[in-house]
Image 1 (tube, rainbow, N blue to C red):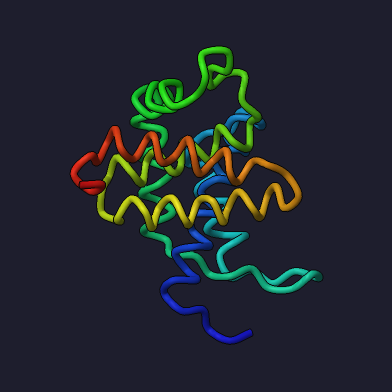
Image 2: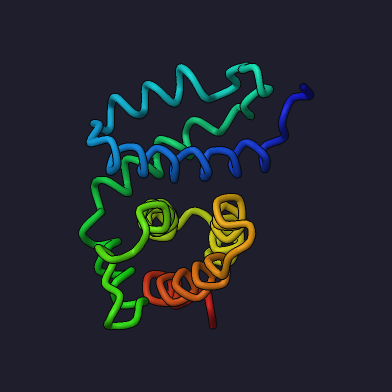
Length: 154
């Protein structure tokens, strides 16, 4: 496999962050356990199905740490972006993990919000290739981004 470029490594880190956050919630695993699992067994690992892309470790760690440390703030932002009948605790676990990882990236603010939104919509497409979820993710993340980085939309 050819060496991935920086963009591919960042995209992989976002996907892995969503998977790690999902795994933490669904499997009741600690942040450190999941972090080590991903770094040891996902980043560039070779399996029978092929090789995992080596993700950007710094971005991966930032997303999972910030998502955990700012979960209440991110969940509240997500709730405000959702319709009243669908609070975050009623959202699919995969989408909840995605909103938390994306929310972490938006809160950190190092990546332009439009880039973050596009990247996480692509992650949604990977998980839900046939569904309406990517459009839903786009709308929710747009609302969240406008709340946390309003100057980026002027």
